[in-house]
Image (cartoon, rainbow, N blue to C red; front, side, top):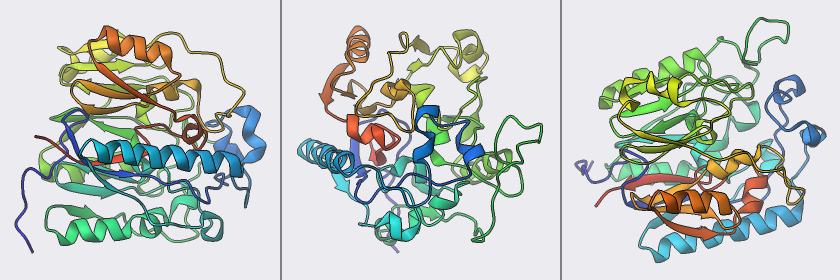
Length: 343
């Protein structure tokens, strides 16, 4: 095995992007988890779409894939090495999508940690979509891949609705989505959510201790919590935006690591849009941006308020259409997985 090269690391969210996975949207299906679990997370007007064997509308999937292809081309043209997931028919596989690699894998330094998904429809997502990429990265000797603990096909972590539990998952086994953690250099911001339980947090903390990383947990009040990158987003060392609906400056300042940071609230939530539909998110998906380097951020082209905010923060803004990808449950941050950042 080749000796590890310390330049092949991903230590934060803002160093110059060098290598990345960009998702793909073909054959995406609505998640079909228990309704009483999903109804606390998803927009109520679209709940009837979340049923078994229900594909996302073909027009949306086609346009989402065009947007993802355009993103891959943009990054390639900027000198970034781009990987794409394997093509999977998620309907036949009983799954969801290959468009959101950030949910499935957590990259910290030279370690890649596979999510231990709470959702049954995501059990085989990494194996089907990302195994070829992970096998190649591991064989190169540059990365250590930590596979998820084995979970039985019939195993679930859904909490009984009668339980006095703010989350709709229990503690019967570790469960977490990688997107409930976000890198801030020498520490990560994390959260509990409807897909990440206390045992999942403990598992991630134990794994990351091997690379000397720690996780801190600000007070967040989001009844539908699922993924941290619609609540808190670091842009460069010492600068982050946050969602004032779910947290505030006082609560964030209680985290010692954030006391010296410039923390900027995003503006008032925009009105929900009619088309293309936000089936799986609130309009705060606009926070789900991708930093290309410490001075450059990638934003959906119609998010004019976010563009203005970043320009006031003296950041260069790159825009492109991405609304149809957002229909599938994420934006630029969710649809990418940075594997290497640095000089």
